[in-house]
Image (cartoon, rainbow, N blue to C red; front, side):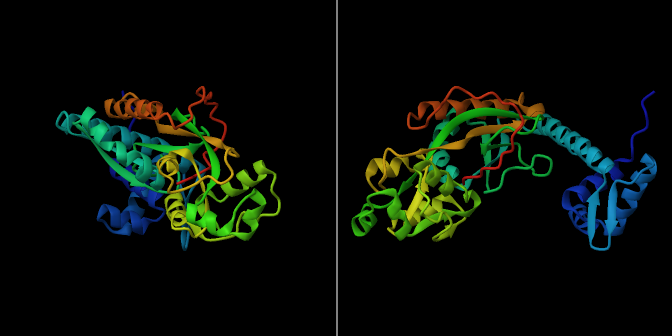
Length: 318
């Protein structure tokens, strides 16, 4: 005989409260009162015989048992939702929700979307842009592209490409400032990308430069903004080939210290939950993405690194 499960409403209330961090927010999301959420959570705790939340006047946090339960409940709900979607969705009308950095989306993916849609007319992409890496235990994201290192054993990482870091500026800016050697960067504006604040230090360390402040200058929340500002002649930005290959080819931006480049310590990956990688929509997009990256001869593909699942994805470069 199957063992009795906790009440479904109690599990739903628990999952919402754990994901949103409060009974009130969970109640708003489920269109019930926060007292109803509290009641259902207490019902779950009575069923289990242990607490799943630490309760404070203005704070709610999971206990160790609650964290364990949340991971299982969240994954189970996701799998139920995926199965239901496949059963009721018309064939050839699937949606794949992807998260990418904004610069990669604007400068590399969007120009290639027509090619993807022509090959997969029945698969629609829902694109979410963010400078933060996905938390698959919390976010409603099915797959993502990130720069970093494999970390979680329950996620599948497909290697895409590696990248270098190098300064770029507009020809007009270089003519005006006579930027000749890397130490000259100390007297010109540097354009920063604060989610990737370590990138300037990586290049300066590689160049052996200690007289340039890597935190000086204007700061932006994406590489796209910093590179657009460099194109207007307002300073020197860092770049990667995936972001500026077209502008370098047309002369809109120039690489003043070529061929001095620093290898970025992280690689680019396509990431999805390991349990979902057999889904046709994820397999289709992953195959197309790898083919598109391989066909772009401007991107550097090394031998695929071994995914040891021991390092964090802590290098956003959006």
